[in-house]
Image 1 (cartoon, rainbow, N blue to C red):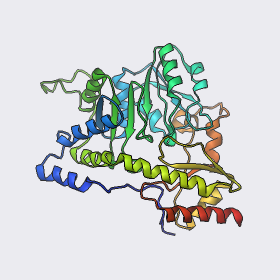
Image 2 (cartoon, rainbow, N blue to C red; image 1 turned 120 degrees about the vertical axis):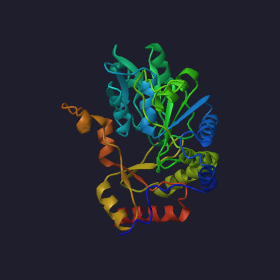
Image 3 (cartoon, one colour; image 1 turned 30 degrees about the vertical axis):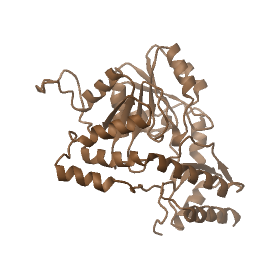
Image 4 (cartoon, helix red, strand yellow; image 1 turned 90 degrees about the vertical axis):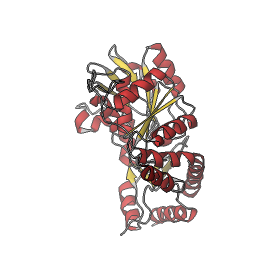
Length: 351
């Protein structure tokens, strides 16, 4: 059956077309266009940060952040077991080693388990705000201070959550809270780090553009056309987050009390509405036949072929990945949409 209720869909109800048209009309379509700086400033201001550095994706944002902090071969970075693999890949791209820490019952990294994984090679802690749930950043920042470590927040799924770390990295992929199709941005209060991020993303050119490159850089730039969309999205962020809060509350109400369904802890901002089901795989097939798209939870990092742990430790992350999934969650989801989706879930469990 055709999908009538996609798991995600961009909300393009602002000045996106107007701003993109302006970039084409003016001819400023590359990373040198004025919309890049406008977006960087607007996004940084919204999140209470001094500097924004736009780039080509959330993954490249993480890679830039680690490189700007001097992470490289021989170093270790603390990464959650329960996350999208891009978090771990960013560490691997630098030549460093990701060291995985299991999640708590809220799916975020279990802060009580971090200290045992710190070694003399540890350089950075990378908490991930899973599905829009803010990690216990006070505890993480205290731990980082005690061990003289840096912190990079993976905020790919948490637009609207204010950073407190050295660098916070956001994704602007098409399924995120706000989007530019592809794209990312790093936020920091440190002007030196901001300069280093901008330097690395633009192929590490020197100030005179002599084509003498003293370090390994990247072509991780955002185009002005992407930034035009991202700026228009940022201008609507208050409305977008408000609408998503309403979606979360409505799902909570409509799904309450269904046997076999376990609701998850509330979110600081809603990226995806996640839940658990005893007969998850059967339910997903049933919903797909009704035109309702769903997605599975992340797989634990130590189960990934590239990071496989032969000891197969017992993990919270494994337990959640076995029965967790999420429902259609996008800003344009209507009350009628949610009533139909939840009605079909109730029908499945009452059959």
